[in-house]
Amino acid sequence: MRILVIEDEKKVASFIKKGLEAEYFSVDLAFDGKEGLHFALNEDYDLIILDLMLPYKDGLSILREIRQEKILTPVLILTAKDSIKDKVIGLDSGADDYLAKPFSFDELLARIRAILRRKSVDEDNILKAGDLILDTQTHKVLRKNTQIFLTPKEYAILEYLMRNKNKVVSRAKLTEHIYDFNFDTGTNVIDVFINKLRNKIDKGFDKQLIYTVRSIGYMIKDY
Image 1 (cartoon, rainbow, N blue to C red):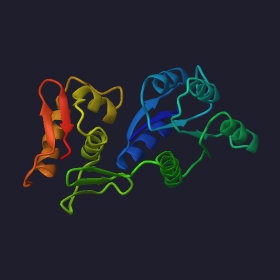
Image 2: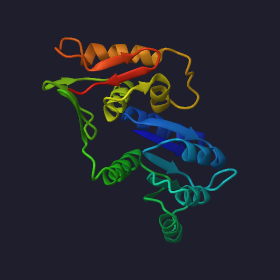
Image 3: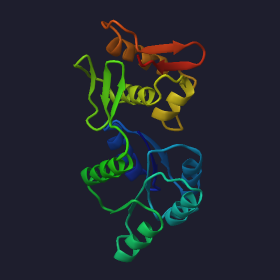
Image 4: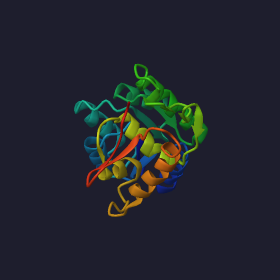
């Protein structure tokens, strides 16, 4: 899943990014309100973590604007403004949760999980393609009841492919989904990860699941 963190304190933002990536999330960072609003309006995220006191455009303005644009992405406010009045204003403006600084990363992670559970209440947390099973809650991957151990990046690519099974996903889209905006899209890193995934997902099994669509990208086929 992909998360946008809009936070002007770079040490805090980097701390959150590092922690979330270790939990199999893909994370984009924006260090001011103008950049954060641009990302929120033009990219697809599963969650936005939003500071309120930001350069150029404050967090509440960002929140109200994305809600006016009918963007329903869950928003977790993360801020030093911790009065009851501030919390009420934030929640009434369209936030899904509110966490005051300083915060425990474990609590932040628990709140993120709770928000995403609410978001996916009508969705199945188990993704399947043939005899391949991926549990988005536990991050376990099984094929024919054999557990397959993946790195966070391998897992992110596989989850994205399985959420789009039987559809071709371009290399650019995969890169955009698992890396931030500073990543060099001209590298062949996606091809390298796909080869590693094939060795873990397809090698030794009767049926191939991961396919290359020449000059475009990759897909997982169900059968």
